[in-house]
Length: 322
Length: 65
Image (cartoon, rainbow over all chains, first blue to last red; front, side, top):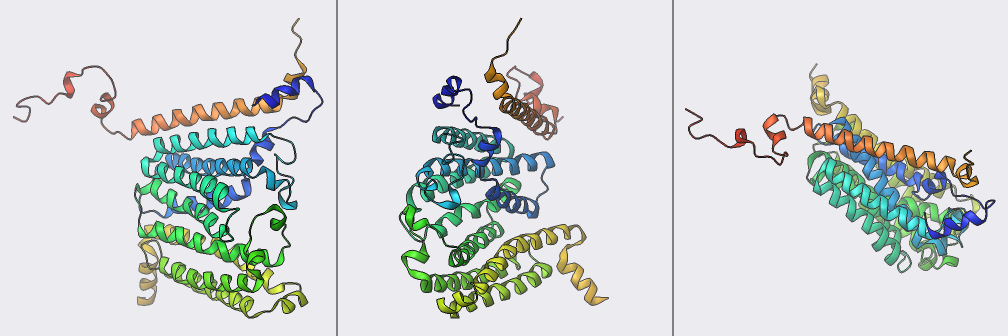
C-alpha cells in the first residue's frame, strides 16, 4: 500500500499485514454500536426505505465510522504505543504503517460519503462527512489531548449515526433524530467515567488529560451524577415523540431509575468505601450503562414494529377498553 | 514454465480479499443503479438521462385537446 510495504520484497520473512490488520484499523467494536444505532434511526423513521438502499446506507455509515477510526489510529499512533490498552493496535504492533492507516481512512471516508450521497441524498452524506471530520479533526487532533472534557466531545461523534440513519430514510432532521442524538451524547460521559473510576488507566503517561486525573475522582463522581440527571429528561422526552410510546416509556422509566440510583450511589461514596468493596458499585453502574443504551434503542424498535397495528398507544387503549 | 514469485504466495489472502471487495463494490454500484432506475417509475423520466434529443419529451401544443 505504501513504499514501506514495497520493502517487504527484500525481506521475504518479514511479517505481512493481512486483511484482518486493516480491518482492525476500523475499530470493529465501535463500529457495531454505530451500526446498531444507525439501523434503529433508519427503521424507526416514518418512511419506508427500499431494503437495498437501507442496506447501502447502513454499510456507508459503518464504513465512515471505520474510516474515522483509522484516521484516529494514524494520528494517535504515538500515544497508542505508550498505553497498555492500545499497544496491540496494528500500528504500534508494527503490523501496518501510519501511512497505511491514513490512506485507508481517507479512501474509505471518500467512498462512504460519496456512495451515501448516491443512495440517500445530500443531507445524510453531509452529516456523515461532518461526523468523520468531527471525530478525526475536532476530537482526535484538537481536543483529545487538550481538555479533560474530551470524552464529552468525542461522544458527539458517536451520537450522530442514528441521526444519519434517520436522514437517510426521511431526508430531514426532526426532533426525534435530535433526541436520539442527545440520548447517545448524554449517555457517553457517565458510561465512560464509571469505567474510568475502576480501571487503572495510563492516559496520564500518554499526556491525555482524563477527568479522573486532572480534576480527581470526587469531581468525576459529581460529573457522573450531573450528566445522568441531564440524561433522564432526554430519554423520557423521546417517549413522547412520534417514535415513542408506552412500551418505550415503561422501559425508559425503569432504566433511568436504575441509572440515576447508581449515579447517586457513586456520588455518595468515598474512595475508601469504593476501595473496600473492590469498586463494586462503580462496576455495577458501568454494567447498567451498557444495557441502558441498547435497551432504549431496542424499545424504539419494538414501538416501530407495532406501528402496522396502529402503534402501541392504540393497542394499549384497545386493551384498556376491552 | 511460469515461476510464481514468493510474494504472490505471501499476499494471496490479501489479494483475494481485495478482489472480493472490488467485486462487492461493483455489485453495490450496479444494485444502486438498478434500484434508482426502477424507482423512477415512468419511462419518460428514464429517458431524461439520455443525452439524445427525444421529441416525445417536448410537450406538444394542444396535446390536451
